[in-house]
Amino acid sequence: MEAKDDKLVRMVNIHKFFGEVAALRGENFEIGYNEVVGLIGDNGAGKSTLIKILTGVHAPDKGEVYFKGKKITYHSVEKARELGIETVYQERALGEQQTLWRNIFMGREMTNRLGFLQVKKARKETEKILKEVIGFTAAGLTPDSVVKGLSGGEKQGVAIARALHFKAELIILDEPTMALSLSEAKKVLNFVKEVKEHGKSCIFITHNIYHVYPAADRFVVLDRGRTVGEFEKKDISLEELVDKLYLVARTGEIS
Amino acid sequence: MKTLNHYLKLGEFKLQWSIFVVLVVLFTLFIIGCPKTFLAPDIYYSLMSTIPFMAIMALALTPVIICAEIDLSFPSIMGFSAWVFLTIYGLTGNITLALASCLITGLLAGLLNGILVVKVGIPSLIVTVGTMFFWRGLVMVCSKAEGGSLVPAKGTILFKSLVGRIGGVIPAQALWTVAIAFLFWFILNRHKLGSHIYFTGDNIESARMMGIPVNRVKMLVFAQLGFFAAFAGIVASFEMLYYWPTLGEGSLLKTMASVFLGGTSVFGGMGTIFGTFVGCMIIGSLETGIISVGLTGFWTQLIYGLVIVISVSFHSILRKRGLPA
Image (cartoon, rainbow over all chains, first blue to last red):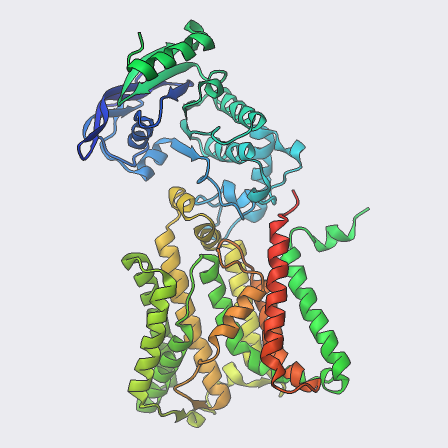
C-alpha cells in the first residue's frame, strides 16, 4: 500500500497486555507532518507503552501502525530508526565522557571504506550542527568539548540536533524536562521549536503540562490505556487544559 | 598571542600530561640518585628488553578496560599459548606453524572469555577468575610442570625479528611494542571500532540504541587480548630462550597497575594508549631504579604502592573537576 497519507503516523486500535494487565486498550493515536504533539498522562497511563510500540521496542497484541500511510509489519528498533523515528532519552542519549563530535556520529561514524574515521570532517560537521541547530558557539562549546560539561538541557539539544542531522522524520522526547531547572527546561522547548522549524514532527511525552504547553500544537491526554481527550492548542487555554487534567485524574473522564 | 596552554592542550590532555610528569620526575630522581647508571645508555637498552612483555599485554588490556570489562586470565592464556608454541615446534620443527597455532590459541582463548561474558552473561571478573585457573591448570597438566629449551629457534628469522638486537643494541621487541602502541592508538582514535569501544564502556544502553554492535565489540576486545597475550608469550620465551610453564605468573597486577596508572578508568569509557604506554615505563623501570639508587629490594613494593595510589588519586581529582568547556 503506497497511498500517501495525510498523517505521518497513524496507530489504530492498539491493544497491549503485559500478562493480565492491559497497558493499552484500543488506543488510536495520530501525528501529522510537521506537528508537535504533547502526550500527557500520569504514570501508568500507557504513554511509554504507546511510544515503545511506535519505536519498535514492543509489538502490539492487536491493532495496526502506519507510517506515511504504509503499514508497519516488522517491529524492531532498527526498522523504526530506518523509517526516521528517533527517540531521545534524557539519560541514555549520549556517552558522557566522549567528545561532541564522537557523540554526534555515534554508531553512524563518518568513515572511509576501511572504517577509518574522517575526524576533520566530523569536527567540521559537528561545528556546523552546533551553530545551526542549537546556537551553542556562544556557550563556548566546541566539537572537542566533553558531554559531561554540558547542562541537562544542552545534552538533549545535542541529541535532538543529532536526530535532525540524520534526517529523522519524527523525534520522540521522553520526559525531556524531568529534573531540569526552569531555564534548562526552556532550552529544551526551544529545541523542540527548532524541530518544528526544520519541518519535522515531534512527540513530547510529559506529565508536566506547564512544560509542554508553549511548544506543542496539539495535546493528547492518556489515561488507563486509552485517549481520554485531544485538544488543539488554538482551542484551549493552559488554564482550561489544567482543569481538564484534574478532572481526568479524579474521574478518569474528561467531561 | 598563543599561550602555553594552546600548544600543550593542557585541558584536553591533562591526564596524559600528569602521568608524563610523574615519569619525568621519577627518572630525574633516578638520575640524581645514580647518575652513573642513568646517564649511560645500557640501562635503557636493558629496560627496552624487559618492559615490552608487560607493555604489549597492557596495551591490549586497555580497550578491555575502556569497555568497562576486566580480564584476569591473560597471563594464563599467555602461558598456555606459549606451551602450544613449544609443543608444536618440538613436534614438527615448523616455526611458522608453531607461531600460527600459538596466536590462534590465544585468540580463541580470549574469544571464549568474550563469549562467556556476552552470551552466557557472567560478569567478566568472575569468568576470568575461572579461565585464569583453567588455562594455568591446563598448562600444568599438559606440560607436567616441565619447561623446554627454545635454543633451536635461535637462528630463525622469527627469532631475530622478535627479539634480535638492532644495530647490536636496540632490542627488537621494543620496536614491536612501539608499533603495537601506534596500532592501538590508531584504532582507538581514528577508526570507528575505537568509537564503538569508548561508547560501549561509557553508556552501553545508548550505544546499543544507536546501533553499535556492543556484543561484537566486547567479544572482539577479549579476543584481541588473548591474541596479544600469546604474542607476548612468544616474545618473553624467546628472550629467555626457555619456556617456563609459569610464564606470565606475577605479571597480572603489574600489567593492570600500568593501565590504571595511565589514567584508564575502571568504570569504562575513558582511557588512552599514551597513558598506558607511560604507565608501563613507570612500572617497568621502578624496580631497576630503586635498586640502582641504593635502596634494598625490600622497598620495591612499598614504592610501587605509593606511586600507584598517588597517581590514581591525582587522576581522580582531575577527573572530578571536569574538563573545561
